[in-house]
Image (cartoon, rainbow, N blue to C red; front, side):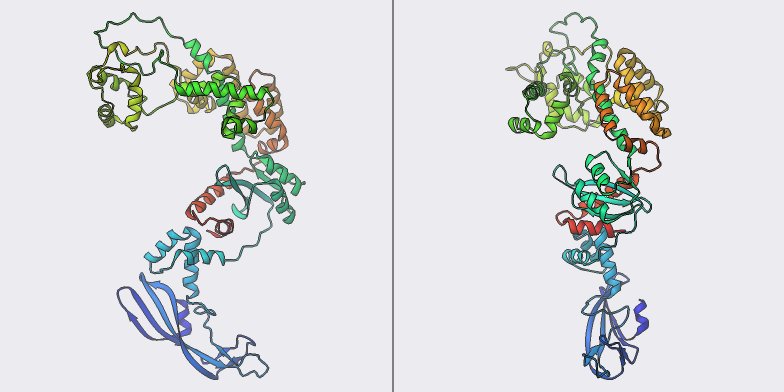
Length: 535
């Protein structure tokens, strides 16, 4: 305890949970808090109790004998003053500066409830409200001179409210937090803090407009990660739209002869002749309704209100070029039961028809789903009005024959992966799939060339790449190319310069953690201080 060098310890009392120190100042004079003149004339004494940092995990309390001095300066407005011991006391405080600093550090790292629990465990008991109050009393740090600025948003309430975090890319430390993600707010901040030469941002148009208005001379850099992410979305849509080509060319082989009623036939993992699923019917109806209203001139907001659909759902149905693009996801949904169809079929054929029993039998094999998944799979194989203990083998349909086409997501992953990162089987599979569809073959070529431009930082070639895409028959890549043209200067800078938003993404992850730690108390002023001050 450094402050013990300025005091004399008269007595030490301790028990299993606390330590009490009785101390007094070791100096004979003190300086007046008003005029600064030193005085040794003692006017009176009183005792002051202070909480200090714990000792060996036990609470520490300091009982200080304080002297009140008479000011010897006749011109001073104070007649008496109390002595203050540097490093130990501050006016009106009930804690030492050492304990205060420790509690502030805990509050900034863990916020209220978690911080209060930790402080109590290590001998510094306090309430969560006290920790929150300590954060709010901290001064806001001044904004340093920033040359390269990183900008990104993070959700306070996803889909409703967002904040903007600003990062000094030279130190990777946040310099400020804005209450929204509007262009005017960013432009005003940049105007108040001149000197920014480079702005690293994502593809959001609001940040592009704000940077253009607030710092017209600054270079804008579109982050490479977000460019690749946008390309991944476009590739996924392209694969979905041409997935039917692969399924048609795979084609079923000639049907097998019918099986007698007495023979045991396994239920099909995916019944080809089953009644259309409700999800497929609903998807078709929504697609037709949205497209009809778009052709009638209705806006997407009006369609959402009329059909009672979320704006993201309306956008998905409005952006789809064909119904098959949406039905691919409905007809090829992956469940926890995939991979266990053979075991379920064997149990069914052996007379075990109870879904709960079947789920328990396959759980040791690695099945992690619930009984409802098994029950839905067996629903179409039960004859209405018959006992479930006597399954009708005629209800069990043969498994679809022919080569199995991988899921669209797996095909997209193969296209977007570096060839060296695929094993021999995946390489042969993607070559076979690309040979079946000319559109996917050209899509693969465009992805490879874009990846070469991005990894080699040949941003000057991106305009030529856009022209090749626009000349091709790939509507989903056309949309991606159009968005690149709208932000072409920032895209070229992002694919040429060394700047990226990697540090910004890390700061966003940290801000989200601090937000969750302060759940229920994460008002903007409190969250801003924690983001700026937390180590």
